[in-house]
Length: 336
Image (cartoon, rainbow, N blue to C red; front, side):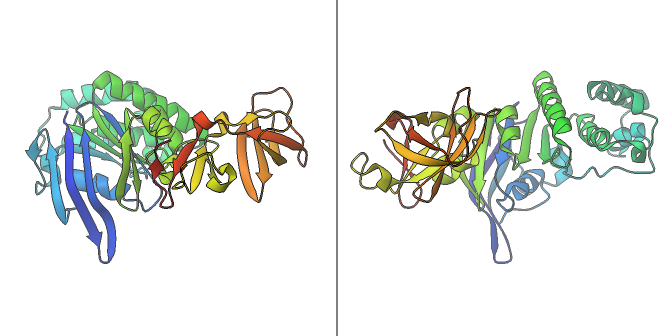
């Protein structure tokens, strides 16, 4: 396995800046997630690590060795793409064995059989080995695509939204399996997603990317509890964080605050004469989720109560000072 260090990586395509001064240190054996919206630079970062793209500036190091100009084959990375990219005319066994039969690897056939059977058992597809790839379900095809990376036993696994095309149940199942496999093998994994649930349930650490720049790096808990700016605060959390006008709290915060963030689970019901009286727009008893409106702004709250308020009813909400996050005009976090 390997540690990875990106030192000042920038990459442009024509006039578009895909990456700008990206600096990351990924530990050996870490499950590291790149989280951000489409176009944030997540896939470009993976391709730079793999050697499929050369950075305009900066260095790529693996285990301390400069591999910036090294060919992809010399870096020993396995790439799992969003699309399955299987060979339809081959069986599942031969799809899994394909990367091991490359002339440069010179792996004995009995070792190939051992690796394929072990990986197939790990992914619960051992009964599918003789089927053609076209005879598989979507979830089985994605398992084969992941298995084709696992059999290689590379230094680094690079995964580009490998579960995004699957249904919710399969995504949840494969998330659990991927994390289990990573823990058992001690593999270094760099995983790209726009799905915060994947990021928070799988990652040892997360890097939030926006417009080709790293906004924040930390454990899911650190990023959720202490976002450095509004963009990061809005990237994690379901329902999303409330970003409220600072003038609602006149005299309670620093004059530099332009907005106040508060998580829905931190919003509380208020007594008569306290807080803000809001109009209920939507509510769900099952999820304890309420959307209210005050002064033209929607406020989301997760209220643990036995009765969901009816739409158009009025309730009072309060925002505890200790749970508020302050942001300046540029969206940067201020000290409370």
